[in-house]
Length: 208
Image 1 (tube, rainbow, N blue to C red):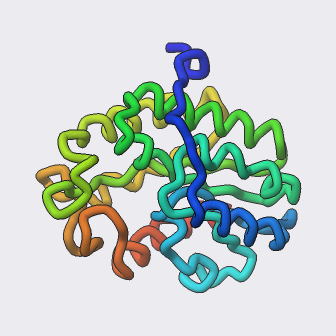
Image 2 (cartoon, rainbow, N blue to C red):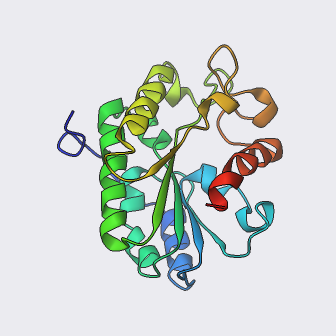
Image 3 (cartoon, one colour):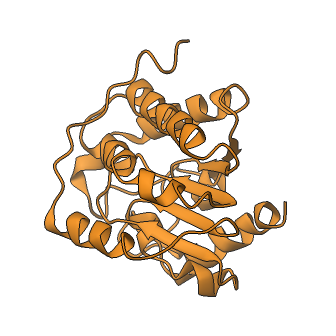
């Protein structure tokens, strides 16, 4: 499969929150010893440096962001050549009715761009998490299989495109394939217990 050639990003129109957040990030430094958490609201919603007990962890998440939105703002982040970057993005593209292969290929193309901007940075790509559209977020209804397909493609491409794939999905999913209510109160975003689990799963990668 030609991952890069088949990419199609969703149309991206920055909203006021995105622009405020980007202007804030522009005044903050990222350095060579730093670890960047990059992505959408699932990244934005956590105090990563406190939870991971690492002051060098920098949160670069923006609520509602898409793969293309992330791509448009990474140059300033990567100029600092961070040691590691952990990426979580794609669920908003799914909600915008972008096909699984197109979302996965856009993520992989983003990773290639990150490598070009900062070859020394280790890149980690998270799987998408399960969700429960029965609680909220009707735009995701019926798209459970799309998420599974994206995750499969991201896992399959990891070695070829030189990133580490982190499969969070089974740790957060019930036997019915939805986000466990223990970890979320709205069927998509994580609660404190959800972030605590995520942080535990990240610890081995922090120590590499």
